Length: 87
Image 1 (cartoon, helix red, strand yellow):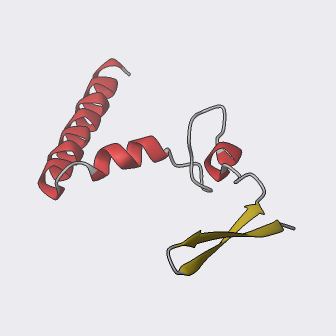
Image 2: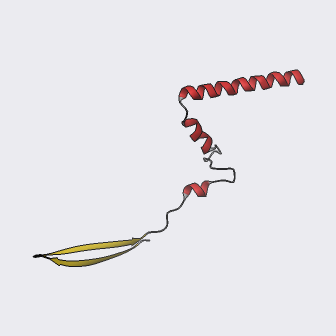
Image 3: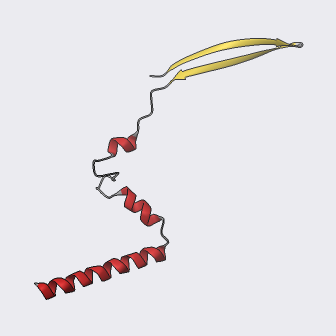
């Protein structure tokens, strides 16, 4: 529970009195939820997906993401072709 401490200060200036209220509140330290959820394998969401990889992909345009996916598909097809030849 937070503690609230208020005080009043008065200042006489000219023909009027200025009153000022100041309140201080003791709040608990904020929790670092990201640090709590961080695994030894890097920052992940609740399903184990790498947040860093998601951030990198979201910086790309949709067209750049499509090119990246096509390159990955071509690499996988090449790997399958090589494995068929050697196996």
